[in-house]
Length: 312
Image (cartoon, rainbow, N blue to C red; front, side):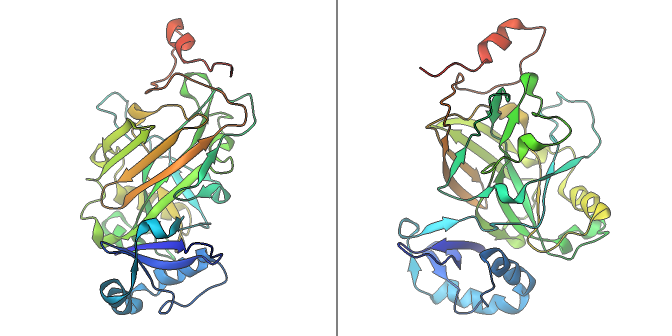
């Protein structure tokens, strides 16, 4: 089952729904409404086993609206916690083994399908990059979950773009603080939550990301260095995770590239869904389009080639 939050045209209320092959079906009549859309979705996660028969009836028999007639919103508008893996991909054997590590990303940075990634008016970051990632949606409270029991703590899956401000050489801006990961709009999530039964193996999922139609990220999650069961065990050993929290699984850096003003990006997690977003930069900075593997100080031509250009 694929759960969404959406708005009808000219409506201010964000309501829960099920995404089906027929379109979006509202489940507002069978799901208790909470104070915020985030809390409504958390309530669905917590009560899903009891709600499932009614949700399945809605998906089968309810009136469906075409996607073109509604606006999807982030399925988790304000997660309590967003944990994001640092690197976590072998990248075809190019990396040395690394210890598993994560950081906390600002929950207020979340946006959803159709929204705009707004680059900040800071001139110190050298470049702004996309990182397209599979993300785990937690069913909690989850604490000290062993990797063999990881499914007990995972409700389902969604997609997240870990937008990142970079310094030269692909280092995250303000290294050590992760402020460069937490500007407003730097955590697009969506387009839906696919329940855990929708994907047989989270370490066999195809991830793709396009910028103005140019394919950038194009990898399988079987290349993770630390697999999903280990991510769940690691995170819940450190802290209690609650329903609606998110663990982003990291990205294959071989597909990194810049984001810049006026671009349209498309992001697809196969088995979850696809969403489109826009990019705006008030400073109109430009970089050469394409995949960027990091400027090496021993390669001055690479540094020169990838420096931002002044707006005309």
